[in-house]
Length: 295
Ligand code: GUN
Image (cartoon, rainbow, N blue to C red; front, side, top):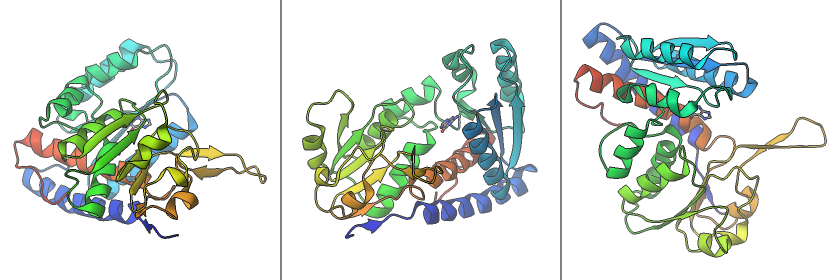
């Protein structure tokens, strides 16, 4: 292996430390801590684990956590009522509705009902539009975490060739806009792209967010490139436990790349750190305070 291993776990811990410090100062100034409300509908085990981790991280960051767990049978109207109540609750600075929602509920309608100033997931169309227009808003946590790792690794991204593989609304598209705002030359590749390997070979920065285990091979990587792997895929193993792998064939890519994120321990921990950061930022803006620095 020649590539530097990008330690997302360590970066995330450092950010959460700084957020906790700033959240305590916020509480001293205003008489209450920043607050994050999570909404979990149904019993999807993976979603339940994520929401629990978010609640724990919130408490560790000296913020208030308001956890709402609802049965899968809840109606769309009831869920919209809860979102409305959280919008009106002054103790709540951030609202996170865990996805996916049950099929009977219109996800877009629920996201659009969240107060954009409390939309710490950055999924509301207003926040997505603000990102597109280069205006201040709230940005989705995973791409924000990827950008943080890239800037820590490379400094300025100006003029670099960046390829984003995957065009989802929660990772690929916002990632491309963030890279563009840092003056990278951005290519958005996807499942219909012709000769993906050739496209990726041009890239100084590769962000893989397709959800296909080890799809990006070592011989696709330009020597010295920085590789950010957003994928979290569980593949079967002989012992039945399964193994987590990314969208990039790690060992192959690490032999060629300049730096690469591992799975797990790369992008994953950064997503929660950025959720804490977004909640802190939302709290400051809502209180009319200057943006917290050094995040
Ligand atoms: N489900 C999977 N990832 C996410 C996320 O980042 N936010 C929310 N709300 N739901 C998710």
